[in-house]
Length: 108
Length: 120
Image (cartoon, rainbow over all chains, first blue to last red; front, side, top):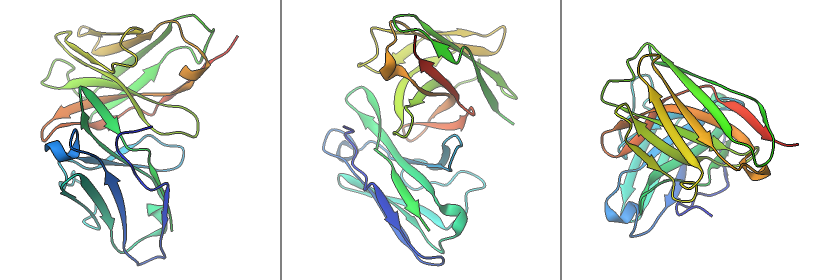
């Protein structure tokens, strides 16, 4: 059971906007620790998507954006494309532990 | 371009020690980064195992700390993981990664992963 809670699945049609939530607590996100997001395409290693709550590494399309407020964070994907179908994980820090969310499967 | 490649046995017997190595290319392991191991049981989510700095400083997951040992070999530009007394629950894809500390810890480069099965 992860200290960061994500919905197991979300879905959207091509071109639509979806958001994936990552809910924490006062010991992790609420304590001010940053949130990072990873995309894992089927059968591949995770890829860094967002770091430091809202920063995109070079090469990540601006269709992907991150935000954080209070004890939660969100990943938003606009202009959904078929290639966005993947698992998405949030990550933060909690009590001497690097914590990952349980992951969210995005179906396009 | 930073590249990481895991290597090691794909099958380990229960109660034995799992040993994996991560070879780093395109980047010096002695640069100002930590290096990490993350695992993913089949069909499940990601679990952090631990981080190591090139100097040998380590930072382990408390739930695995008693069984984990990480080391660095700067001459070979690689780092390693040992997990002792393995059981079936340790069956997973093991990833190595470069870790950056900026706005918190995160993994910015990952290896392709290697499946380790614990079975007799």
